[in-house]
Length: 192
Ligand SMILES: Cc1cc2nc3c(=O)[nH]c(=O)nc-3n(C[C@H](O)[C@H](O)[C@H](O)COP(=O)(O)O)c2cc1C
Image (cartoon, rainbow, N blue to C red; front, side, top):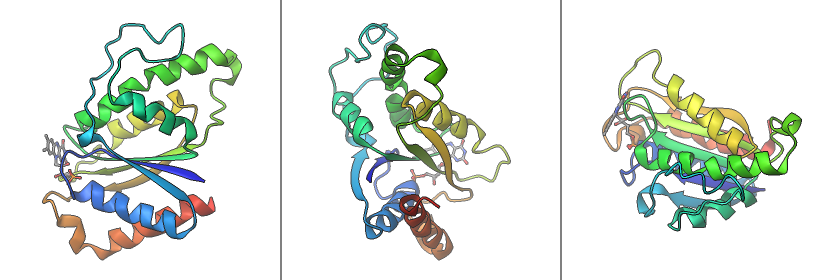
C-alpha cells in the first residue's frame, strides 16, 4: 500500500505536522510505504483557470506541482494535514487542491459520466488543527477535502480534527492526541 502524506502547514514542526508524523509512524510500522510532501517547500502557483487541462487532463503550468501529479497517481491513500486558517486550509495546501483540477479534467475525459463517483483510486483523509473551539471550525475544510479527493477519484474517509491548539508545540503536551494519531495510522493500513 502506497501512502502519501501532504504536510500543509507553513510552520515547521507545528501541530498538524507532529500529528501527521504520528499517523505516518503508525502507517509505517503497519507495513505500508510512505512518501511525504511539504507544501511550504514547493515553488508553485495556484490554478490559473486557463483551461489548459481541459483537452488533455494535464496541467500546462510548469512548476513544482508537476512533481506531485505522479505521487497522486501512485498513492492508494492520501493524508492531507493542515492548520485551520480563517476556517479554511492553508493557502499553500489550497494551491495543491486547486491544481488537482487537472486530475478532475483527466477523470471526466477518461471515464463515462456514470462512473465519475466510483472513486476507485483509493481513499483520502484529512487532519486539521485549529486554535479556537468554534462549532463549525472543520465544516469548510471537510468540504474542501471531500471534493479534492473526488477530483482524484478517491473516497473521502474523514480524519482527525483537533481544536484549542495554538502554540507551535501545543500538541506535544497531549499524549491522548498522539496516541489517537498513531492508532489512526494503523487503522488506515488495516482497513478498519
Ligand atoms: C493566518 C492564520 C489564520 C488562522 N485562522 C484560524 C481560524 O480561523 N480558526 C482557528 O481556530 N485557528 C486559526 N489559526 C490558528 C492555527 O490554526 C493554529 O495555531 C494551529 O495550531 C496551527 O497549526 P500548525 O502548527 O500545524 O501550523 C490561524 C492561524 C494563522 C497563522
